[in-house]
Amino acid sequence: MWRKLAKQGDPAAQYALGWMYESGQGVLIDIKQAANWYKKSAIQNNVAAQYVLASIYDNSTEAIANPESAVVWYLKAANQGHVDSQFQLGLHYQDGNGALQNDLQSFLWFSKAAAQRHLSAQLHLGKIYQSGKGVKQDYQAAIKWYKEASSQGSANATFYLAQLYELGRGVVQDNQRAHSLYLASAAKHFAPAAYKSGEFYENGKAGKIDLKEAIKWYESAANKGDSAAQYKLAKLYQGGSGVEQNIRLAINWYKQAAIKNHPQAYHHLGLIYENGEQGINVDKSKAFDYYQKASELGDVSASAQLAAYYEQGIGVPIDIEYALKLYQESPETWAKVNYQKLSKHRFCLENATTELFSVRIACTNRQILSKEIKNKQITVISENPADWSDTYFTGAIVEGTSQLEITYTREDYFASAHYTFIGRSDPDLITRIKETVKQKYGEPDTSEGEPMEGEASFQWLLEDGIKLVVQRKWPDTTTFLTYSLPKHIELLKAQQKQSPNKIDLAHNKVGNKTTKKVDPSFF
Image (cartoon, rainbow, N blue to C red; front, side, top):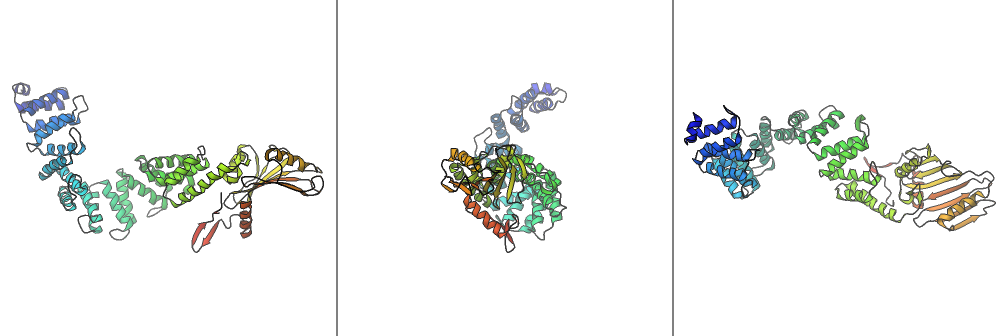
């Protein structure tokens, strides 16, 4: 029956036949046929057909998708007062989809739809007045339309209204009213409003602090996928604020927020795995990956954490230039300090020449030098960062030596490297060692004593500030070869005078504060 009437030109029958092909009622679904019959009806000014045809052109994934045609038919329906078409035209002009982007046209069509109590149009109109995009900014008008949409049950509009009360835009600032509106929006399961409700309870912005209520609303938002709430929950579980401390739950919430590209969540995951917090195993590789992701998402504090990995070559090749770039981008005070130190270190590296185990010792520290020594398969006799020095057995690497002792300042900057060459009634040993050193560094700057009988020493003052000394007591002919950096030797002596134990004065106490002791002359 419908087909016969449709073929006779009946617009209602044509619309019905289009619906049958669209929905598969009595026929196989065929969107092209549906569009064909809707169009026949739409040409006869059937407003419903015009709107549905526009929707097909607008939303179809098939070849008939055509945003420009969608706008044409929305316009025909809108001019007949069809409210949904008016709203859709507002969207198309706003986004420039199927029509030239036009803020004024968008505003006009949203206004027409809003006047017919179209909820989403009222919401969009409120946002336009709030932002001033295409019209003069008018918070009072924004509040009017948010209230209209809110009265129709829009959780979004209630949320935006709450924001204006919180910020005092167009109204007297009122946290109590804002909180009430956030709670009303949250009660309608709007996740951002649940997050803001939690924030108000956590910070006491509308009354007393209530962490129990804060956590309830954060969980409500987090379970709806709100990444900000997931991040907040993670921090509370990590710190044990209002809940029992639980690092594994914290990690779980951080990871859920991170999946949604929350940069600070990635950053905190990096910190947890770098420091091995609350029983979590240290995993520098994971920490690096998390810092890298946070940095890519714009977290400049994480970029500074990442810089340390490139500076020290932790899991990646050392890249001083990239580390400097990352430090420089960070607003963190400690990153700026590190930038200055690393800049000096780079300058030192450019001018340092004296190497020990392929490391330029004028610019090195305990971590770097220890790592390279181990890479050479040298046996550790004692190695403890709480001690002033580390000792290694070097007989298998440096012929004639028994051990190497390396001393460091409290900050673990290189101070000296002290080789011991065992000599049993071998007065010529010191001369042989001197000649070996001479081949690399030339004639010594000073010579003292009698090499063949009695105490003797030879000294080189190298261009990068390293002092190299070959010396021997008497009658024991054991000979010592020492590399030292005089300014760090003086620092080391001063520190040892303050306290024989390296770790006792690692931090200076100033009142109730603790400030890390840093040598300003480093590098």
